[in-house]
Amino acid sequence: MEHLAVGKSTWVNDVATQDDLIVDIDKIWECISFCDKYNKPNKLKSNAFEVRNNLIEQVKMRVGNWQNAFIVGTYPLRMERQRLADRLGAEVIFIECDKETCLLRAHNENWKKYIEEWFEDFQQ
Image 1 (cartoon, rainbow, N blue to C red):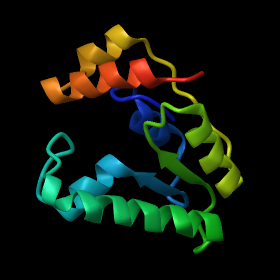
Image 2 (cartoon, one colour):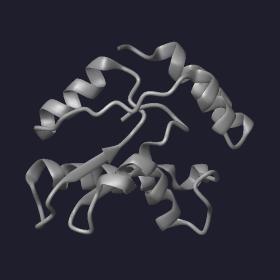
Image 3 (tube, rainbow, N blue to C red):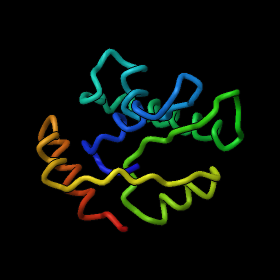
Image 4 (cartoon, one colour):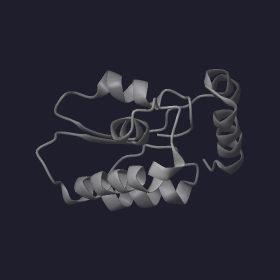
């Protein structure tokens, strides 16, 4: 799954069941703070990413009894996506959305900056 404000979490919400493991960095941020998903305190960044990395490692090792696992992320680089998919024995699912729509969905100027950078870095 790919860029910001495209509907990655919405897509997963539509297809996942209660027996699936969802690794979504926005949801992790919400779980470890009292902040909404658009407010990510820098002091918690290492904690949020460590939780995500731990869950990804659990997917790799097939820890638990989940049916499917979904890793929700914004991976603009082809090699990064492929490396993660290969490591997990997973399929990359690309949720396509144009830049203008993503920018319209952005909730603040920081998101707009990240969206612009994502489209600059993206490799098909």
